[in-house]
Image (cartoon, rainbow, N blue to C red; front, side):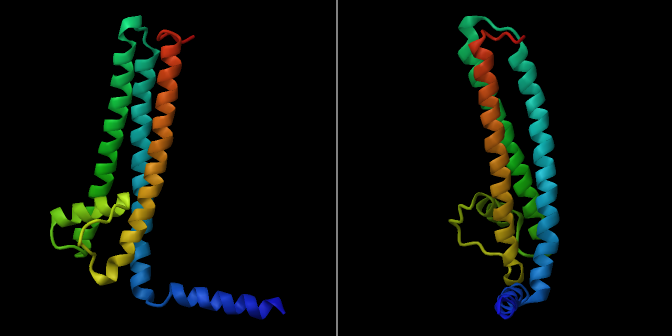
Length: 170
């Protein structure tokens, strides 16, 4: 009784996923490795930034300079995280250019930043047979921004903890 319903639903879902199998496969074949590459780059970058944050917050600092330390550490971590996102958007833009999905570097970068941030307020569109990659890049953006948010929260926690003890760590 439940098996025919399950099979019918499976056929509907499978039919949707393979409606245009060549284009869907190509988008996923390019998109998934780009997601993995970008997450690896992001994790390595955040790890390097984190090492510097630990060094800076472990140093002793005079009480009257605490606010400057806070601004320096949080501001620097935010700037470096943003640069990471820019590099990752550039990787997607390079892929779009390589595939001929967009006509020039400027539009490829603008499209990529729009897709990654889910901003989407331009009239740019990928070549029709690559349009799924834009949605895949948006998924990548959600993952990367989630990692960055968690990282920046950790930086704030580290700095606040460090400042609460006058810059001293045991």
